[in-house]
Amino acid sequence: MRILLTNDDGIGAAGLHALRRALVAQEDLDVSVVAPDSNRSATARSITTRTPIWVEEVPLDDGSGAYATDGTPVDCVRFADLGLVGERPDLIVSGINHGSNLGDDITYSGTVAAALEGIVLGIPAIAVSQQSAAREMGFLPGPGFDFEIAARICARLVDFLGADPLPPETLLNVNVPAGTPTGVEVTRLGKRVYEDELKLVEEEGSRRRYQIYGFAPTYQEDPGTDLTAIAEGRVSITPVHFDLTDRKGLDRLREAELEHALGEALPAAVEARPARTEP
Image (tube, rainbow, N blue to C red; front, side):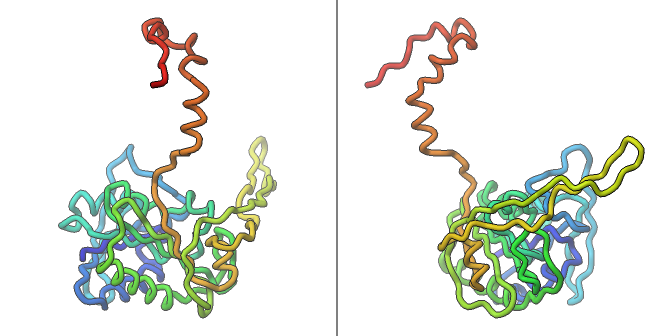
């Protein structure tokens, strides 16, 4: 199986290298590494469109090589898909992130964004994140990480998926709690409760600096969610797909006959079209 390993914490991140060591120890895995040249946390699904992207080959401690780019995590996946590492990957593995990616926070995460890019391209993916020793439940990680358990879990998960592959449109968002996990739970995404505020940090003439993020968000305690599983010390595995369509909303809007309601705003030729009749 050909694996692309990437992350959003950068090519030098300890979590990336812990996971790489665990993957290359597995039989029949061809692991390539393409990662940002520095930290790109919270870049979500941003891409580099206005300038060409630098790529540098960098040596790793075992004598193998990797690629560092000045692009984003999504750019890294695109590089692999377009042939930078040879054949197209069979699986994208993103992580291990320094800090959790839970609930609504996954929409900000560069780690999860790389995995999402995989399923956009038809390549199944895993995103792996590690809670810090501070057991933070927010998106800003506390100090202290031990990645060994998370690396072993991800390697076993890759082995499992070799025999029972994910559908191409699915990713697994894996979060590992600090310390020794008490179990593994298949979860759904939980709900964040953000406690952001507008905090003035500095003034310089007509300019002001504000802090608006990072005020320790809480969450809704709801059994079966990733947030509750991590708070209770269990590994959380959440299947995620990219279809954001609100299925109930489709039916509601169709029943509302929006084309008729908005008819005055449409060109005359469209407006004159006979109204749809139900069979």
